[in-house]
Image (cartoon, rainbow, N blue to C red):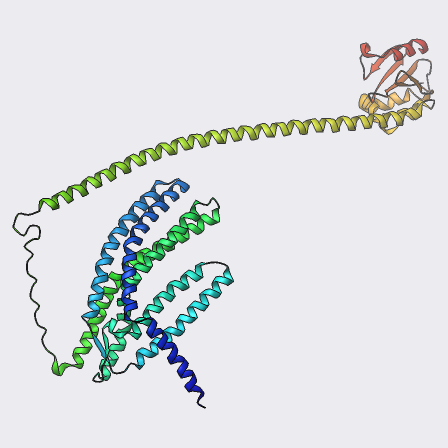
Length: 482
């Protein structure tokens, strides 16, 4: 059993399927459909581009972006006019430049490779779309599959690219046909590329507008990039007919030179083409210059330009006024927000100060309670023990400073500490002259304060307190004991 014959049959069956499906009528019908689609996709692209620029101008607060949208409309209109002219010119150029090849093996091989490529592109785009969870790879694969499918149609129907199989074709003719066949395919696909690029670009512009309307920053960036891609597809489709025509003309000049070299023995001078007859109905044919109908059209166009200019200037004026109002409102909102934030900060500072005061008061109260508990134990004990307590000693040292030792000397013969009306009274006298040199150390338990009274030879002195502030309990004790 010849296993390769089985694979040959499968391959031929596949090629025959594509040959029957993608026949000549299919191509011409689809070409007309795409050219017809271009007639509505072009104005749709212009409107969508203008709408995108309007939304972007509002979002970005820039009138220049809207001006770019107006320029875009003119670019699409001019590009469509040029592209439509060269679509017909490319089709006519293919018909006027036939070529021959001695065998269909080359075209069939190219068709097989294109079929394999078609399957690979479809499978790869599906895989990438599923892998990335996005529709962009699938759309790109669909666009490439359309171009490959129509290329297969041209290879299986070589008459569409004015290529015929002739047994009389020489090796040189085959070489020229192989060199030119792919260029012819590119030129013959002009109408399809023209229409499909405009349709695909319009779809991208539609989706980009929806992304731009979304408030999310990432969506706005994605919309901008997608609109750029749509604009590139649109401009590329509009420029393709002119570009491929110019490229093919200069390339075919080289082919004609090669063909002339191969057929020098039967080269014939080209017959002069008669000049086309003058059109008697053309404007100005009667020597009258510009026709009235043409003058009306010129006036209408001029009026349209004036109206557009006035609308543009008024629109810019209104837009500037809108920006001024928006700036004032934004400034007012910012001031209100700033005032609210300041009030919030002030309230927070007030609450924090109150909390700090409460903590300080609580700490002071805790210190007072601890101090009172600590000094109460000295009641009945020696006055020097009280004065030398670290917490109490610190208070007296603040009062006497460098004279503290002299003060403590006046308590050389300490007496017992007594308590009276919240005060601890610690009396004593000098060890050398107890009758004349005396001192009384007083501790305010509640206020955690201290003061002292000294008596030297009967002369009383107050330390750390004024006479009018002396508590009654202290005055009474001094009167009773000194």
